[in-house]
Image 1 (cartoon, helix red, strand yellow):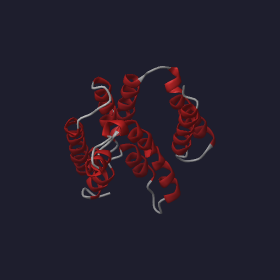
Image 2: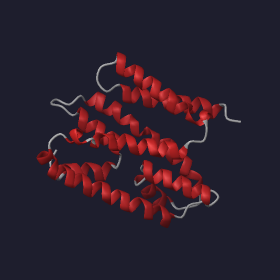
Image 3: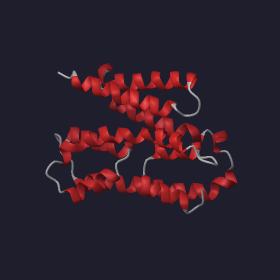
Image 4: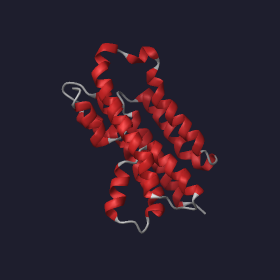
Length: 192
């Protein structure tokens, strides 16, 4: 992808997981079905948006929809913490103050990465491939609220791990995602 296409993709999508997956799977010709299935990783945003819905209640749709566009894992985690602190409400100014710098940083840094990436070559030799999982682990640790809440994560991890062993390509992503969502749905039906 060109130096223009990379920030365009990251700016219009703003979903790092699906972006990494799509780029890693891109080939000639592209395996479009696999790429589409792997982008299911962002379906977690459905649940994340639902968790934020009470905080946006009563706010006009013209404000809520842009806020949801700028929702990424980090913005969501900080918004949820703010909701807990403020008794279930969140200021759109706070939300924008969290989302705008993260969005701008993401787009600018992906543009810089697209420009200097060819010069650096394979950055995994520097250990940069660990940054993405490390961010998720830190967020998960910060959101830990007990074993029951972690069951969708655990089920997703087990399903993805088994898929790596028995399915070709990156099918572990949609399998893990759908398993986690399914377990979360089952647990929601049995919530007290």
